[in-house]
Length: 337
Image (cartoon, rainbow, N blue to C red):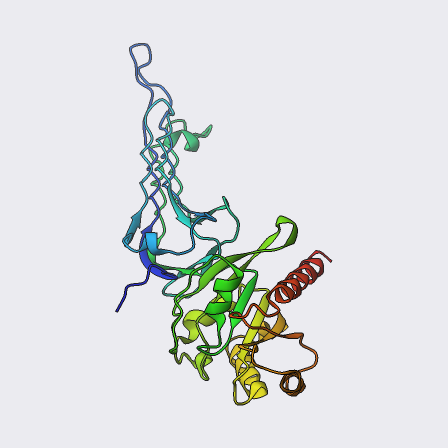
């Protein structure tokens, strides 16, 4: 089996740095036989930081980083000198990356913007030297603090593709062909199920030098929400797409039933997906006459915009771009309101 360069989930062992210990020390020099406490603080342990990078589309570069271990902080020294902080580790990740604790399943970090830095696992705090414990009644404290331990454990980095529009449909609905026509992307296209086994992204050039991102997602099958087929592996990517374009082929035996199955799988996986904006595209429609198009349109839900397209013949492709752009503008306006 061909090894994919698209990796959307990585399991990695992480440990942030331990804090350095503070020290117990008293000032001694040729002029001072019994000076006061001057034990310095320990340095902070190194953080593990996630940094968003819009030029990355996969976690494949993390495949061989099985252990991410940050540097410990140094212990303090005399003269109230603080130890050096441990060096931070910065992990570059694609936008849409979420970090989880493997054992608890708790979400620990999320990166959505280019250049955004999130301290995922903070390093341990350095311990205090004995200088801090001096009081009027205790002029020579004999104790200091150890550094705090770092955070360690098995973690999971998961990528949910960030795209403006997600293409949803059964295998061989024509999603990859449409993506290749609307963008410069070159997805694998063939006449068998699950040609697309990982998301493909493309940039749609629109009017006046504007553009938006579209994702060709692996085909849904009935039972995908229960993990059948590619199941949860691709359904999680849909959560990031504000607009969903349902692609149903013109030669489908029952267009409404196919749409209802797609909607049911989304609802079973996450009911919140039903609050997104939907558009229905009837693909492979270049051979349909007006009578057949009217018959198919009557089967579809009236409240959802629909359009008949043909990727091969170029039918209504520009009109589809207009519909998607208008839906994106409405989505942005609703978010700003």
